[in-house]
Amino acid sequence: MSDPAQYRHPVLDVVEDDVRELFGETADHFGHEILALEIADDHVHLFVQTDPKHSPADIARQFKSYSGKHLLDRHPGIRESYFWGGGFWKVGYYMGTTGAVSEAVVERYIEETEHAPE
Image 1 (cartoon, rainbow, N blue to C red):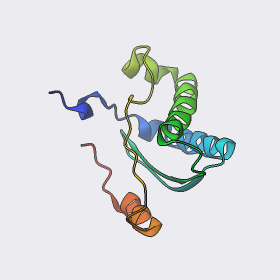
Image 2: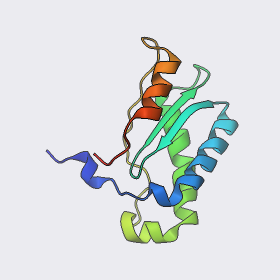
Image 3: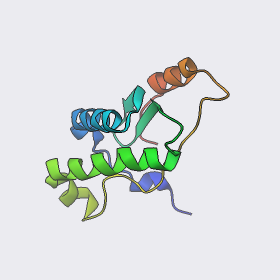
């Protein structure tokens, strides 16, 4: 079985400000509140509060599709160097809820997680 981390590209440090801006625009548009956002070189930890009418799959799609399109438009060199015409974000995602732990615990985890490539 292949390691999914092998397909990650350490480019987020180059586009971090754009990711923050685009995620903020997405949150505003859909009525989400970003509680925590940490950007590593090759992945993002995002903690949002939103209306339960939004499914986890919809939330992931909203953030990834809007930001991915704009990131590749703004940084065409990244597409040419790393993505060869594919999308910016990996297809999958991890989603969890805070039912068993407090928001403060999740925020602390995101803020304190070492963001070195896996």
